Length: 569
Image 1: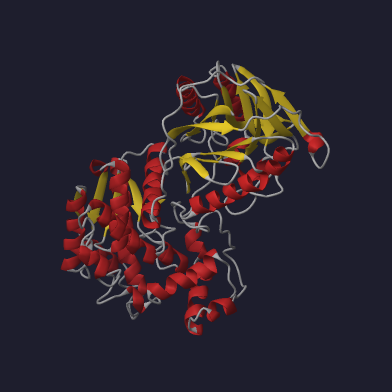
Image 2: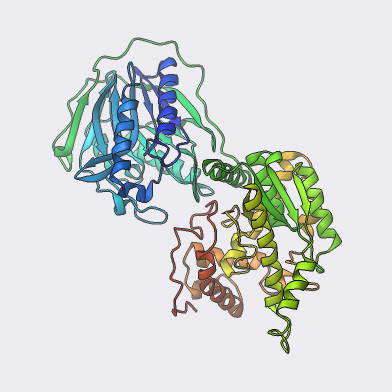
């Protein structure tokens, strides 16, 4: 039995921060070496951060990335490292460098390039066509990248048939709720199909709308999980892998793709015996509501800090959405870096003020109260001639929201605070939000969180805290924008328990109208929801980015035309 000590470094790179990413990578290599690791795997495009998008169109950026990789190479004395970077050879490749004892021994080019959802890899990269087999300490490794392992007949299959015993797969795999279970099922399938050990290293952190959840895994040839990393946290996961003895055989070259196999011999003899590691770490996945909450916290923290902001400001209404955003911000940034602003009008209830103030006290965040009635009256007075002989309607409601948006942006300009908007996915999908009003801000924390899930996460926060951080009344009162007397969300929209399943079917799953009707919903209700979704695209196009937590968010993975006469009903 041969033993290989594998380190999986789930680090948090920042797109474009080549020096910072280098330091993170080198630190992981150093710690892996000190722990006696034979090989350490870093995430996909760890040097540049993922996704670098149109930075890749800048030749200087690509050149600087190659220079940074050479600096990393110097740190690999006495260890082997697999590091994601961008390679250039007439065109660009999403690549993995095999660095060994201070030398760059091989470059693998990702073969299967995703070009769906949030992925645009064919815009930048050319697919590779070579399959490496790396012999290290007498163990034959196959190296590939992310998408390469998702398909049964992909590179993993070819490498296994050619003689690989362990697959080292590096990733920048974005999160959505339940993604960890999907990955585990897929990886277990690849391992069983090929009777091969799989090392899956994933990035952690956030880049604009994307969150990377870590949760690196090691799976044996029977599909059993033998080690896993934490979710949403940087970590160096080190595990001893036991590989059955066999005679080292040259890579097979008969059969499909085998002529494209490259053999890289780093060391044929097994290494000296090491003191065994104590136990293997398997981290139990978080419950769904807590998982999404952690994703929101990480996404918010990274967005602010990576963009140079220390403090967030939030319009508190006393409602459930702003309460959740404030709780996420406090957890992400620290209570001293969050400001809640209550902006009452004549339509604001005493209960709303009490709930907003109670939330602020529970979280320990700063609380400001800035009434808007006088400003609202001034607006109406300014427009009195133009609005004469017209009835009050949504125009006056939107004026209030826009006054609040202006006040928050003024505070942002004056003090350098970033405004966090509070609209949820249900509202953003159907346009139940005011452009340049409650949509005004720098980051939309819950834009991909349906209203029904908002309630679930709030209850999860209270359960974790063992107290009602979010006041009980916030979770039980009827949702209202309080922009006119006795207003309720249900005056304009189906109740959220009906609305959210329709939105999931139409927005996330692209189900046709007739299939949605078969789910048991009223025809007029479904028509109304589809009409609102399709007619609100212009609003969403102008909304700030926000954390993606569902398989299909309202950002870059759903690209619908604004000018659109097609009717889906």
